[in-house]
Length: 255
Image (cartoon, rainbow, N blue to C red; front, side, top):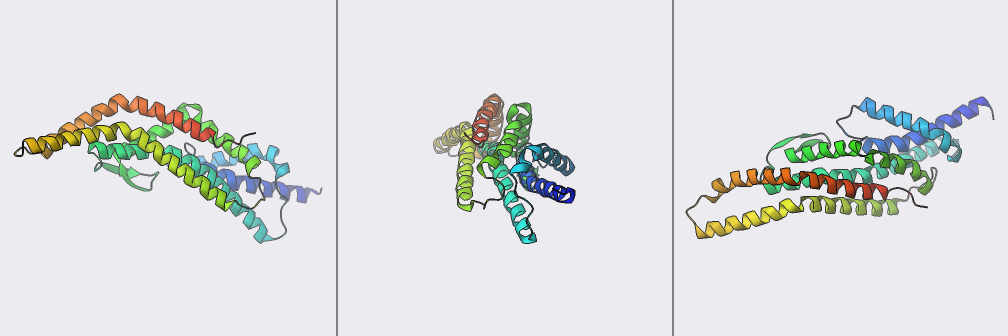
């Protein structure tokens, strides 16, 4: 093979790998956090692509003659990366969503800050739980699982094949449902506590109509909720780690 053809093939293979790896890592939990500088995320995507290139380049399609075909291949690879990284991101977002549900239960949902992960305003607890998720990913070995899933995705969806839109949509919907169910499960102790507390307030308001229940109950709800949060936060984090490990492991190819 002539040197120009070899270099063209390697350059095209690198672009194909970068399209999938870059899209996946830019949206994956941990590696795709908005708090990380864009240059750091892009640099890691380039390095990871270079590591994959020697092993995967022989299995990648040759550079097509038509520019439209090359663009279509890059679009498909980008879509595959976004699907993989987005599915992993959903389970990471389950923790901040649980934080928002918890804030509603504790009566502090009005305390908001800017949340870069959602590109808008979010609750303080949601932001806290989002940062906690990023810390837990790098404090454990969870950060390895998206990388392993990305490297193994070429066994399930080799480069050059048509994008399975139907299967991808079904997979993403299942991941979304699982992530939301996980968020509700993580926040369930606080939901239960809020139901019991508000039920007791309703009974108290019927027994003592002249009592200003709102002004009496709000400080108790907030302080009691924060105390309950301090007691259960470790258990919530441990439960999320176990569920996230199971979910991210399910992204790895089998066989």
